[in-house]
Image (cartoon, rainbow, N blue to C red; front, side, top):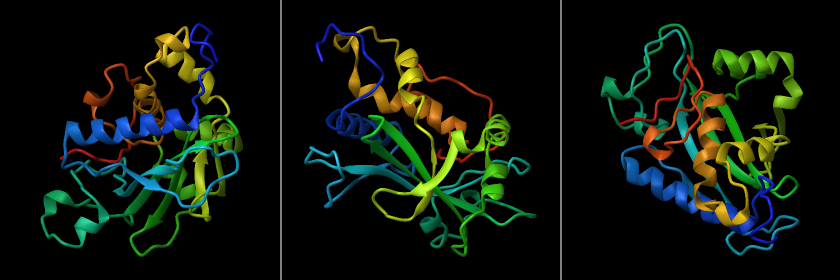
Length: 230
């Protein structure tokens, strides 16, 4: 594609890796005490892959804060087992604590990133669709009820080979083109792609990101949240 051609909102696998590295580095720079996104390399090559740096981004063991409870500061599930400091734990008097893992995977079909997520209770029991829907912000829950299978789907994770929920990427290229506002490949800063993408997708499922990461982030109201601050 010529640098003068209008950008269509998609990225290559190589660009995805560049943007992933930027997200990992910027996330850590903002506050190294945050639970970290990490790059998970893959030894197996997926159909359509031509990049040596194949893999995906992972942010795991995130506690969900119930919308009816006070949002306390939490770190990760693994750290919960090592500390009795109540300031780092989710306090829930009525509901079982829900824990989520998030993966960002490159889609060779749509040529955009896709968010995969897996929710489970503290005993490892997977969450049902209804339980996940109850954890979502009210705005996302409304969309899910009205168009369940076009917004969120359950399918096989291409790397872990187990059923995970995913946000359907069919319209991602369209709204990313509008979000970044680039008119040509020459004007596009590909390294900021995932930062901008996560500012929208993260808030759609209640995953708050540090505002310092993306000054141009799109803000959406959210009642329920995953706390990732220190």
